[in-house]
Image (cartoon, rainbow, N blue to C red; front, side):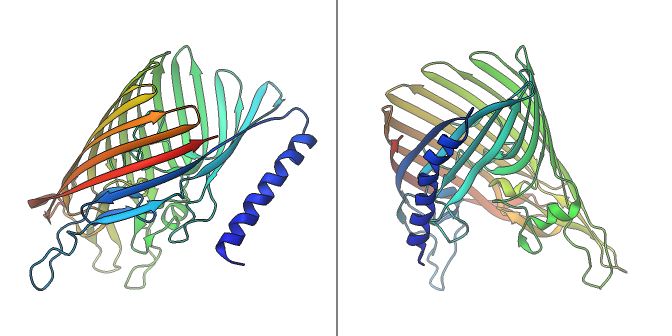
Length: 404
């Protein structure tokens, strides 16, 4: 059975099951939703991307052939529709005094190069006691949070804004505008980078999930808050010399955010100081800071990256959006070698994004322009990048979305 047959069969089973489930389960209500989305983009340069080029991060450095021509200075054009989605919101009977709800949402992103097959985006249930709630399942990563930029591109402001969904257990207390959140999260679709490439094994072997704590204040229009995430990774059990080792890299990544939103206008901003958050589609990584001469056991130090963005949007039927993003590599606190990560040769990264969309209740058409400059150079002993040169990319995206 080919890929299209599998996809058709999967969707057919889901659609046929919907009325049956609705008929059998008394006390439940279902709200089905989705969209058919097509995006076409053109970039003036080869870029660091994922998902068939649709998830854009930053332009690649100059790469010269034997005649001195830049191989990466060539355009890139594609049309994709794997961001077509459908989902269902469920409300059900109470469990004691807790209101129950659930959400399942899928798209056609697939995994790796296997695009065009179903992928779970969100899959969680929530217990709500009024001022407190408990969520279990997969939804937005806690560092993505409750404040994220509004743009047309599907990268949600990455690499300036962390973008990922993660399996998690989240407790939230929200009373009179003050909200406290604590989350234990694991890795699934996006994973940390290490000596064996991208893998969830580094977090699993550490025995400790990602831990996030956040404090927020919010009212009808305004919200502001702070948060921090602790992550501990274990890269190896055995050294190159054959000894059992207990190596661990533990990092803390704080963030601060604010947002104002009314019926027509949005203003939002966020700033992070991340350490080795490569699984969130951001810049970062780590290096080896020391090696035991007898056993080969290593110690590590993370690269510290400052990420910030500023977002503005205005309008209803015709809506304008602006995003300004900036990232700076602050290097490591110790001398390091053998750098591993994303964009470890980038000193600074800056983007300006301008978009305009026409919106109806069931249809959207939009155009967005992204100008990104990356400053590449050579890392010094503490992984701070020196002797830089700039590389630009201009990206134009057109999108249509039929919403149901």
